[in-house]
Length: 417
Image 1 (cartoon, rainbow, N blue to C red):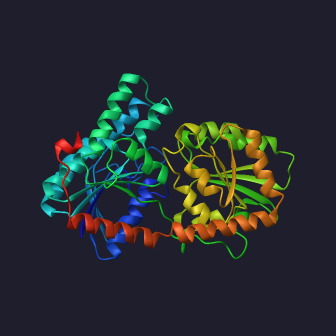
Image 2 (cartoon, rainbow, N blue to C red; image 1 turned 120 degrees about the vertical axis):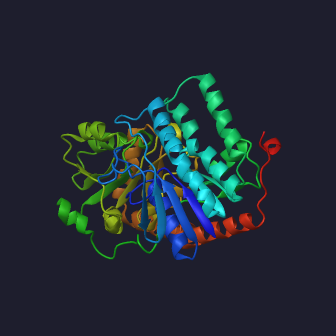
Image 3 (cartoon, helix red, strand yellow; image 1 turned 60 degrees about the vertical axis):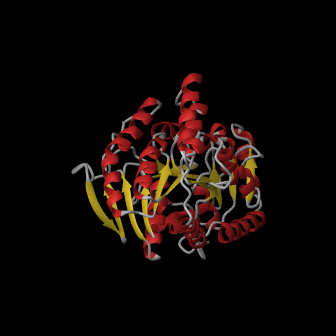
């Protein structure tokens, strides 16, 4: 198949949706498909265009067998509210001629990865002009998240935004998302059940494995092998409720056997650094190389998955896959009826969001019970191998895409309204 992936974020970023678009494109290319990507220059999670990508604004690259076409976008220094909307619109506009140019290539599938929903119109149009299957993949419900977290405000604006989102989604031949709860939400938005597909985030279970020995990170950070490490590794953004970690660290400052490590980068860096200042039981780490991911995650005795209550079931954190594959238990802050809780309850503990005492108590419970940590960690690895392994998930998507292409049914305007 000829597969065109349209995604604002794309590898070589170490984290985020760009990593998944990159891994997917490279896997498809390695398995015999002809793959092209239209993307912005790398800018996430630091919110600045990566070194070497400022000029020229348009370029072509060949990355691990994938042809990548870059189009520029505006990156605000302090993204919030309307700035985020304009940021995404800038890429949708700048990438439009690049997408239209791909029509001559005649792709079989055009996969638009959202966010950003702003790219959906051009993804859909390119597919229609090419006679290709129009596939939209929803990593998170950005419109719902924006209003629930007050990044955007106004009931009238919300109604208009949701109407536009629903209208766009219903014009695609396939709409996929990453969790069962999010599948339910797509259906509640009026997307037909025969259009919706579950396409979960995956993990390279061969690349991220339980460590046989002690992680090299402990020596580098001066952490004794017998200390219990509670690790958060991921993007430092508002949806992560990251400040609950230094709050828990303060409550547990008397536990000399506990060390908190927070690894990543993002917009919350200044707030997080200020909250952790003066805490001897907290270490901050910048983003680490992808090739050291298994060693980094294996440093943990306990993984921390903090999440804003406002964003639950509107996203399913991709970082969870690596945590589970590392064979370590997880403490998550979420409500019990969420998809995060359904997964973590098999291999960790759940605490109520916003309850620092409960979060700290869950950490202490695992810290004090090594046998429980081992049992839950083993369950985490089993779940990753059986439900999140990269090869079967991507093979299943390729099969679904091939079937959709063979019998593509174009949604008419009457069906979409």
